[in-house]
Length: 134
Image 1 (cartoon, helix red, strand yellow):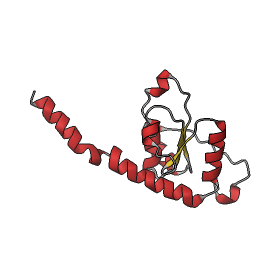
Image 2: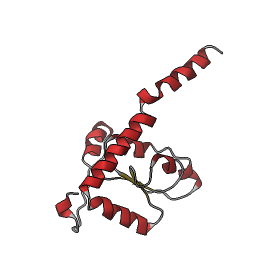
Image 3: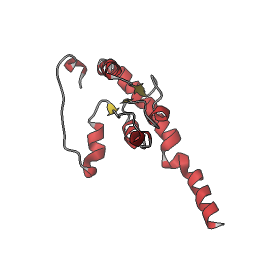
């Protein structure tokens, strides 16, 4: 969404493919992850949020399961509990390119610090070392 498009009904859909996933993620403005609050979704991984954040995108997610730990409300995105929250936070992000950029940048830093291979390599090596020595 371009700032000049705010107030218009602009929705673009594109067919997802694994091969083009990275390119497709670069073309979005806001990553969303709406989920019902049930037993199955409480056990879901927040991989989609991490992908969005790795692509420098702000996120809006339902406050379900791990999403509550991945999304730092007001820092790298928002947690939306109901329709009014979703509408409010989408409007805020749609109307501010600067906020989308700053939240996306903060999200990327969180991914690099907590979820990247480089930030977790010592943990992986320690696990493999324990497995090999027991």
